[in-house]
Length: 266
Image 1 (cartoon, rainbow, N blue to C red):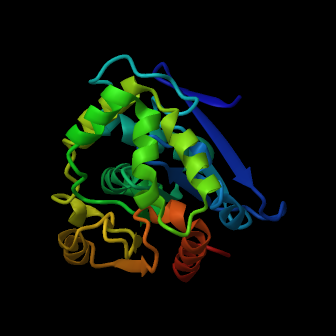
Image 2 (spheres, rainbow, N blue to C red):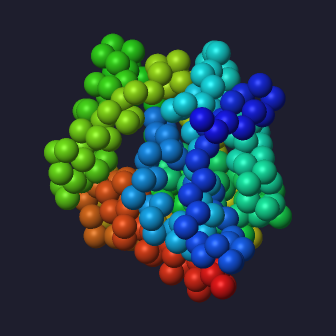
């Protein structure tokens, strides 16, 4: 299996490229969110990989990447460094970056701290102020990560998702190790990208839903409009708050159109 070793951390990655073999495609890096891994992007890949070299990976502690040793294992610096290394190693030094949920927080920080590596960003259900994790962690500690995934999945995916689809996502997200969940929640509850969002200068697309439990509060959308004025904000009419999982085909098509209008496709 393909792994990239970064200072002793082995990151599992996959590359999908179905572009014409006589062309030189641009790259897209996909960054998943909490309790996810590379399969979370499965439905996006066919849309993107016909036009781009698509790089997806398991963030440290998730999926098939290296496990974490303690609750202080995660830092924004390391998450950004891992994403940057993947771009330099496999993306010819620059890429369009798409982040889902808290993976979008890494996307924002990568674009802010290493603007030379990022052409555009797409943020799918990325809240600027993630909810405090105490209630989620209490459930995980008492009943396990899989139980938490099952309890929270219906509002996450919405009424359009089939029972089989919900079960697939429960199995994917529920396989996360409790040690990873503890460390990640410790990290995500202390990151605030809203204060520095205005430093991101590249073209941006923000995808959200009309769910009552939408990933964004109204104040978050106002912050995006104020501090990221170049962003296009698209709300999809679905009742699941994880837009990239609820309607992945629509999200991928909107993203491709966004990239095309920014001269991403040749």
